[in-house]
Length: 90
Image 1 (spheres, rainbow, N blue to C red):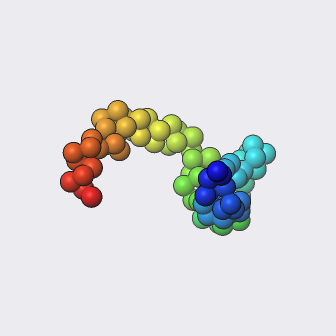
Image 2 (cartoon, rainbow, N blue to C red; image 1 turned 90 degrees about the horizontal axis):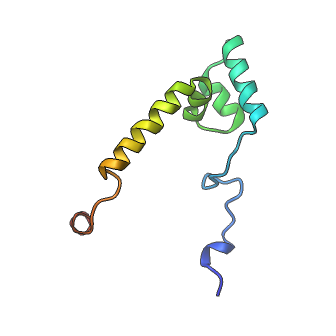
């Protein structure tokens, strides 16, 4: 019996979490931001991605720092409560 979600099309919607930019587009975004007077919001609107992604493309150190902080939080268990806490929350 097929899964219920197989009939749902998400391609091109806001639920589509696949990679949206090819490496050439990333390089173009970086170059345009550094040379032209264009804002991150304008680039995000133009390419149909979030401003946060543009920030990570323009400033890779920020993306690295963000990933490190996420891994630290995950290691502390901040994103996975145990069963008792989970039942209390619900």
